[in-house]
Length: 286
Image 1: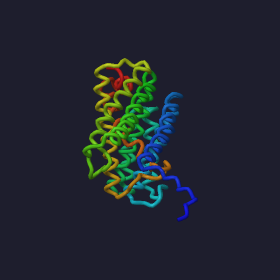
Image 2: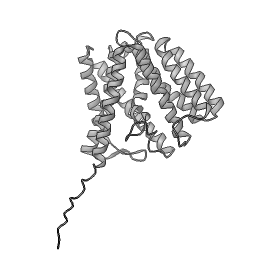
Image 3: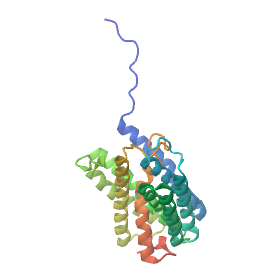
Image 4: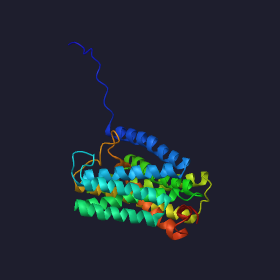
């Protein structure tokens, strides 16, 4: 019997390791990009928020229209993308009320042209991403710190949920919507995300208080709810990913789904706590 002189091919990375690598790579690009824009000031952040909102709306339309292309072709989709981008810019320059008015105009325009409740919902969803980011950064005293804490919380929640769920496993959280998510991942994401955000707050000079910690718990839960919501929408329309814009990991919507819900809640709480002119302070100072 002769020996096989050809070495066996190296095994491909497992799904778990591949997922981990892509998550780390995408976070290594997206998180610093967002923080650099926030560090350099208001308008770079407004521009990033507007671009992100426009991409998310285009991806939403791609999912709900069951389209084969991400490029918007319907007038309603183009109009919606323009209005959510404008709403994000206006949120920073002219305030949340003006931004909501612009988004409402986009809702009416998309409703008239598209005649689709799902497309209309996409305008609201994308505006929930762009408007809070711009509105938080518009606070000159606390805008950067608020965005730093929010981004660390959301991505910390996602990362710790991934690690805890994969290493511990256990009962599924909502298998019909997201079969891979577990209760252990949800709890791990909550604890790890809040802890990471508190560290970020302390390092950036924010006083760590019980009030802030409680708010971060609710923001982490909102982030997880946003993740589940996006999974439910994709499953409803039989789409695995929102697009292929991020190689190996789907679309922008797949990476910022938690930020949509957490950002919207942060905006509401900050406004109610400290008023429209100090939304970021209302999030951080308790």
